[in-house]
Image 1 (tube, one colour):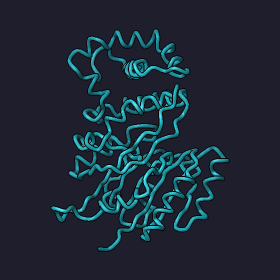
Image 2 (cartoon, one colour):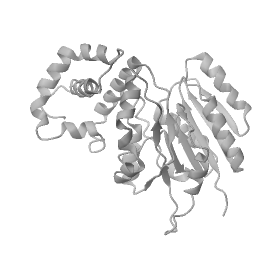
Image 3 (tube, helix red, strand yellow):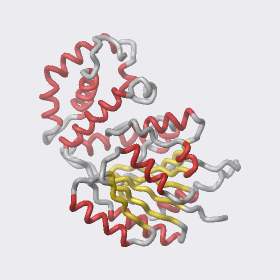
Image 4 (cartoon, helix red, strand yellow):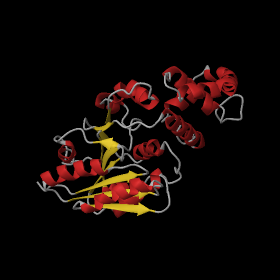
Length: 307
């Protein structure tokens, strides 16, 4: 059977990813496959990071492409797909860490037709594992708390609702037919919309146990700011993402409208105090959930409903 050819595509913004690329390069070389590694820098502003990442160009079959303007998470992935030359595209976030020696080999094994079918998998999601808990780091605490919800068994139960862009393989022709929605310029939810789009077109997402590790966590202040940006994105696309967001589903329970005015008032009175707590040294997940709900509700002008 012919070995599949692979384009490994890594979008990055102000993140050094030379170790990630080197590890992937080593595995690809050992396999002896046709491959390329393309890193697209989405307008990074940190010059030291850019200079370090330029070392990627020294590796065979690898290139570091610098964009002068930040185009956003969806557009940069579409750009990578259009630059790729091989049949399979492996998208990896630049802050991931290779944690298995057979990582690429495991994906290659799933590109062959299913044992009981002649149908070839088109989209394969390997998942993410979370590194050691970092005391006092909100992102680390949060990701560890929900890690059990993203096992392969859990993901298989709702394959389109539990899809993320950090680590997935897709056929190039499928990707080019169903590009990421470039209206998603700001942080968050472009992967959720992509999962919805695949479901609408009847393209199966296969979930497997082939994770990358997430071990480098931003500061509490940066994570809260990213969360707020993601909530603004969700608010903007709330009608289109209904049924694909747990937060939106929570807000559409029968009793929730009775609580909207109280939660808005609470956030307007105490949101600043909550935020200072979350950016401190001992953040609480309960306060984090309450803050997210209150922040989202204050984006609405109606007193009742999520119109």
